[in-house]
Image (cartoon, rainbow, N blue to C red; front, top):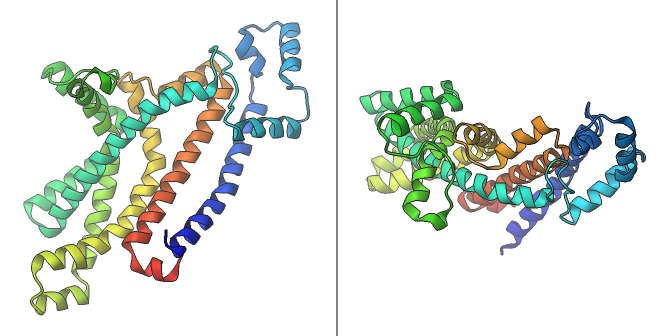
Length: 319
């Protein structure tokens, strides 16, 4: 590993510490000042004596800073506590659901990269032509139409009327590649719809900006092959700022996964989180918030590493 990349990774990792610490404090305060005691969620009763007894056994009567230190110590060892409603460890519940949501998110990113890249490229190189107008209309729709509306429309068209794809649910890969992909197409496209529009517009704008650069015009005038100009002088520099948009989209994408999992009845992290809110299962909410924050930080770290490899100025500056 290059020394500058190693230094970059160390700096970024050090920056994540205060971010995750802040998230952990907020997650703890959320439960500590919740309108309903966690003991009520576990007991499913309002008997004052039983609640007081359980709060005592759970250590909820101790000073908040003591409770926070104990909780954070357990979190750092991978112990997120036990669900207040389900008779399972939070870490086990989250892991099972994250695996499903993660697959959905990966497919959504694939949709986003393929469609946004293709449409942005076609639109920029056919500026003000019919292809450009169609791509821009698609982008406007992507930004304007909510996820749940897109999901319901797709269900009506492809599952109810055409009967080409299943109406919902999740099937693991072990059930067969074809069946697995059929169940992933509609929900993953729904999640990626908004981000495809955002990234496509960003990529198109960056491509047009690069096409007007003096060095690109000079390369064309000097007779440099068109494919080299397109790939090296236009597309590659345009990809770098677009990566920022993709990285920032990750946090919004998670919220899209939550809504889509409800529409398509997928048992992922989103549905678990929503059910936990209704059940008052605060330990699951705490764990989910921490996991989402960790995913966000990791995604941005990956984008920084991609920046390092794509932009030579970053490698030279070492930042």
